[in-house]
Length: 189
Image (cartoon, rainbow, N blue to C red; front, top):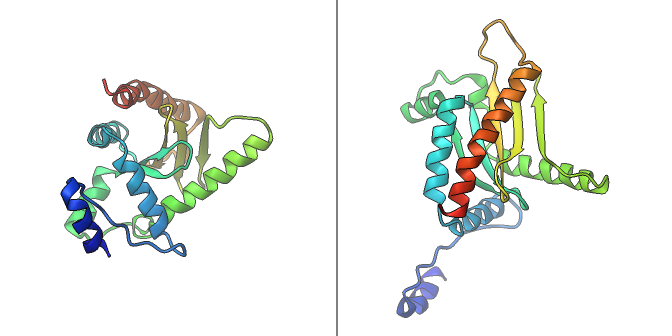
């Protein structure tokens, strides 16, 4: 089917990309995310700045979501996790081994449900901080008019098992500082 469509589009110099999906699995979510990404003109700049931002925060993972649909736009992992996954290290911790490949879709569904609940209360979603009992901390905040950012940090085992409120505010201030750069990218400046 794709060959036939490509043949028809060749005289018009269109390059077609097909997404094999099913409505019954996460492939549809992934396909929609890829389609949305293809519509963003400065995608490489978003990716490179997200990597730089993660070098500052040293987060386990940072994910950019489109604001309305909560589709994944971009994500990056910690340098340690990237190194371990590319070197094929068998020394990955349990938390890194257990990353659910469907986590983005699940997070998206949870946040959309949360946003709908807030809408019923006539309240807007600004940011969310979740402190997990397993040492994981999640920060979700708006980054631009069209993007949300989710930052996943882990306790580093320095005796202080839990981040305090001032550390949470510091992370949110870092997001606020990064917001200026991402807004410039979004504006095409």
